[in-house]
Image 1: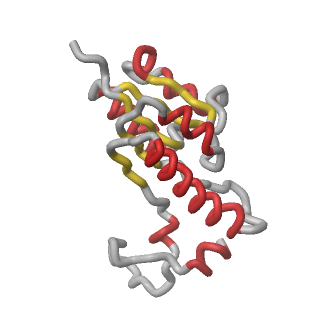
Image 2: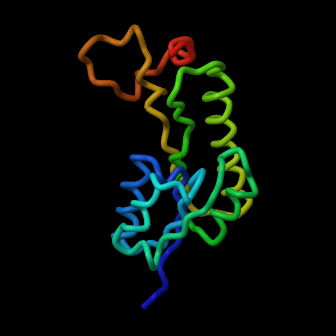
Length: 156
């Protein structure tokens, strides 16, 4: 039997990323998941997933730390970039707390993937990209034509 194919999921402890990790493990992939703190109890559910003991490695990484991202991506043929800043409290400086880290983090993972010759990269956007559009018709489903107003995002 061939060894499992390796992929990396950034922000592996998040809601969407956790489900992605579960799906990838169920399909036989070896998964490298990045987390701000792998020892944080909120991430314990990951190691309880079917196949995690054999095929899940957790990496301490911040999207602003290119070396930590490179360690997690090493040996992977694909990367799912799901990590994005999600502030829990009122923002003091939204530009530097959300926008800059999201953009720089995406740039960092893309540069790491390019350098390491990763074959496939999927970048998942934040809901903030479409959620804050005051001109969007009430009740109309949001789609690829709906974009947030940056001022709305920054004042939330």
